[in-house]
Image (cartoon, rainbow, N blue to C red; front, side):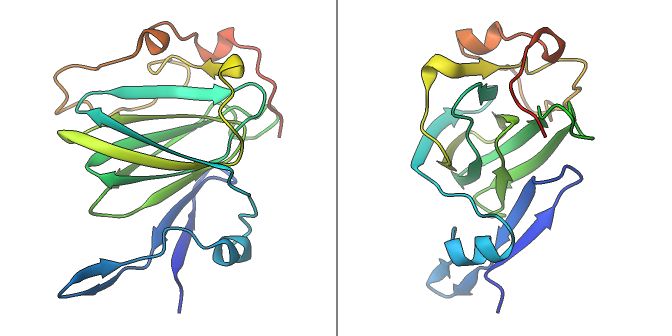
Length: 187
């Protein structure tokens, strides 16, 4: 019996993961991570840090990466709904500069695995959202990097229809475009 569906995206190494839910009149149970199952699917990463954030509607966090100590991330929403985005920054990749988005929510239970060498960000679509993620390396603020969330060369189509105001950190208001970056990632 499968515990997870590992859905490959059009961008190599980027996965949408659907855990199997066991529901009854009490509620539900699911495994959100199982090292053996992930390894069978070819996802052989080791996680060293778990993070959680709470944000209100319209908050856009990203598009972030670390130039050293690059992090792979397994992300999910515990409460609420977000539009989650990953951008391939691996020079030499046939999908360099392309993005993939997926709606993650407490209802659909989907997860998104974003490997090293990608930028990552999300937009909160619900009144608020609690977002969690497992990381393959530790946060290293000294190597923080980012790309402008509305970089036209990437062209992320953010679902802004129900968003009255985009709320950005000062850091995210001043991010450079992809073409203005020297990135250390390769494929």
